[in-house]
Length: 187
Image (cartoon, rainbow, N blue to C red):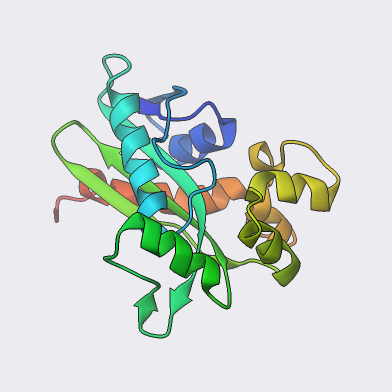
């Protein structure tokens, strides 16, 4: 099976290859169609779907995979602003007391879709404040850690867990959840 991952980031390709070890997995840089720093679950999930669809269309692939990381809040009753328009969710998520790193993945063969989330990790207050002020999480992590391209290495997930969960591990979980309709006959 030939699978396209809608990103040039090697971590996203590697996470997908873990889920589909018998397949040829190729990274295809495609736009997400959402903000550079997705805010809220709806926008992050939309970016993943857009990437999966665009990746599938780049060549004769069997599956397209899209992975998108963002930041979001959670309300007492569930996801902050679920069901509202993306603009409202962006505002509600940023106003939330606590922000989380979230990741969503989507898998499609052009007809069927699977969408799933990975783990959510609480952002440290100092980092959340910088994101609320308009900075993107990736460059903030580079600055805080004094490194470059953290997103292509351990990622924020690795930094927040002391290396116990790398970005590849976290994205693997999201891709596995999204791939469920293609891995199980229960769908």
